[in-house]
Length: 190
Image 1 (cartoon, rainbow, N blue to C red):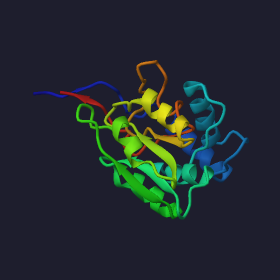
Image 2: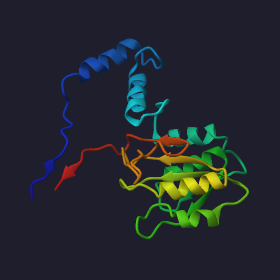
Image 3: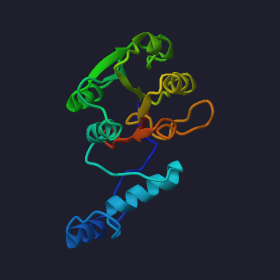
Image 4: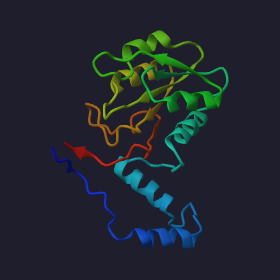
């Protein structure tokens, strides 16, 4: 059976000029028009957010987000039990402890019903991980987070432009959204 490509990821002819521009400018970042700034600006527009910061990986993004909300030794972060290793590692890197939340039997995403059972006085944050294009139960997770005054970090590495049932784009619902280009590959229709 022949595979049909949905997206054409071939080079379009501008890549050499883009590469030369990066090499000529010395890999600058900031407001000088560097490609990282262009990416940040496009993310701001496409997600209707005020700020975004490009980093080298999704793991670094999660780690930075946890540090930004003050996660450290003695804190606990609620994270799905079924999740890529990097989610737990980013928590570990801060000195905090990952607390694993069971998966919803229908979606295999973080169970909003199990979250409250896992909250303690040490709980600092909920890491809501949208996976396989699936969107977590954002309404109930955010309700729980506000009730217990917990921050919410959304990991959207596997859910680009996913929307919850209220039409909100993943990564714009919690306090901080994190994306990664690591799994951004060709989509093949068989």
